[in-house]
Image (cartoon, rainbow, N blue to C red; front, side, top):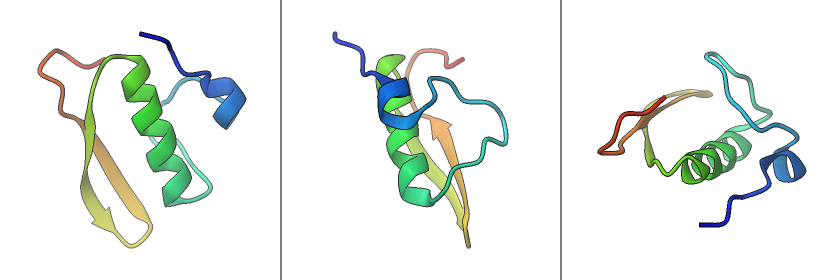
Length: 63
């Protein structure tokens, strides 16, 4: 499977706990593309105002 060029698209290639994004749309796109590169799947579990939380839904262990 061909990997997406995350740095070219988003200016970053990894995520950390409590990472900040400009808006919800940019975070959603990056996280979904990052998960795809890792062979994982994610879903949004919490929405509270501007706060969004995503969790791994892959059947294999997530990093």
